[in-house]
Image (cartoon, rainbow, N blue to C red):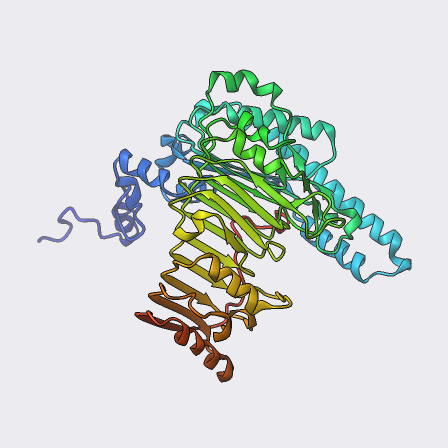
Length: 481
């Protein structure tokens, strides 16, 4: 090649790198996502979970703004914590520390911090309600939305309650909404440091009168409802507000939220929600617990479609279920006062899980139970644990699979042969979960189970590390922390 001539190539390295990086999918830093077809991008958006994840994921591709990701998001979570100022966590921490550790000289400082915390929460609630109202008034912008989760502070303001009621009415008018979670968090002053007298009342749904026209039109498709510290005025209100409800969870934060239920409340739920297949009650206390601690009896009417009933940390003394022909699973957890469960017509009831002292089962349906799981409860004690355990197994004589989860010191799980002459004649499989560190003499006591279970075919012992903590469906801490 003669001097002064070139082959058409670019010998400038900067210009060469710039030319190689041109185009959406060139070079080491190429945006490969942008080369995907629109239908694949929409499929990615629809599977990211909720609006927060979709916004974060949309930053990966320049084309997603044109696709309008909000139209394809299946779940939205809107929390009042997003409107709290940055200084709120520190102010709340100082307020709680002053309340716990302060003396009389710190009253002025404590009151000033309380005013700051309340001001932050009030402003956040005002902004939250305004934004939520605008969002819920545009259901056409979010045709793929199927799930909605709303988190807000408990408030005594009538204006805020009225605005939240209007937002609930707007949410029920979304044509494709199938799952709704409502969580009311205690205010900053109602944390763990609050006194019993300062417990905040639960949020109460409005009367169903404003939405009767909606109910009559049967436009609501809501099938799953999880409410935390949010209650209807009566059990019949759930069926009126949510006529298509099939799964219901009612949860109350113990110690910080005040909620007492009349004895007929839960029976009214089953009467109004005839299509209910799943019912979970968490920390639901009946009214008058201090006066009649051991006399609470909950009568539930026949539930033709109920498949699973879960009772967690409730102060029920006796539960009677009139009839549940589709009931398959019953779970009792941390219900120390529950001594008796009566189930009417439930021929499909096969699974019983007790994460506390097992109650005695009554009714013909108790004979259909084949699988029983017993888990030792923290802090449980009774006068005669072996007799109570023997009474429980006598009420479920056809158990074939027994699972024992012994993470603590389960004295009431240690079986004495004298109490079990012929109870386990149908037991075929025994599963035992033990911690890695456990006294040998207590392990030997479990061998007495083998002496009683004469027809046992399979024994499985699993040694596990002691769990460090437990996880919850709905976080109970203050939003924004």
